[in-house]
Image (cartoon, rainbow, N blue to C red; front, side, top):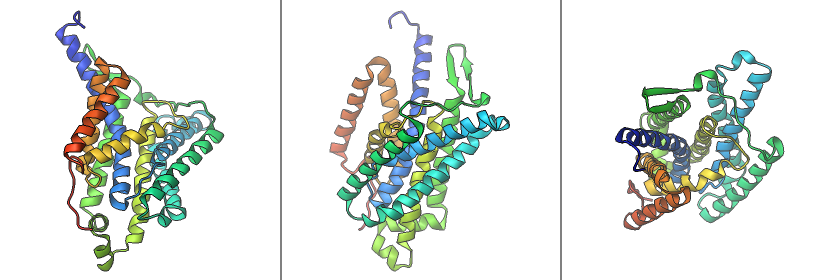
Length: 307
């Protein structure tokens, strides 16, 4: 470390910060969906990570199809994969909500156990269909390589794409929640379910489509995940603890808190991993989050609501 010049240290700091932004992007896409489901419906969805895996495998399958049978799609399949991943994950989420979740509302311990069991079942399905070995989607040529703002700094293009996709999805969620009639219904149901029902809002339908939206966002996170890592049956479960940490730390019902929390945790972990081991960095991040939660039990941006 002593032999490094200031310019080299600055380049390392910039690139570590960019790695933190890439982790932040995937984490935020996952956490946005979970924040909507957990904050609006109070459902502790332990299978949320498997919806990321659905999106990742969907992207892998489309990559293989374009490679083997539709070479003219190789340059554009990824954009299609993002859209298809959203709709497949949302459709599976809609089915899960109809068959299981709707029977478990206001029973948090039961939803935790039931979705944990669902998570194990889905992992076994992935293992049976795709095998235990990790697979990787073939990225289009335009996603390969890097940009060099200076001679010593390389910023990968796939990381820039993940950040752009995250920005687009986050803006879409904000517009949907704060600028549309559907968003008014969702926020009314979040703040006072009984009163929203008395005002004529179909809270049952809101629950159903909100759960599907949250799962669809996890599917998009899975498509983004394929640009920075390989996919296996348990890929989603690796993110579920960090995702819950982000949601609880930011405040379960605050999207702004979720964004701030995902950014803080991803950057703290990425920067500290350069100086420490990965395990030590994670432990220190967790300790810092616990200390802050002791001071602010409802998270960084808690919202006062009347139940």
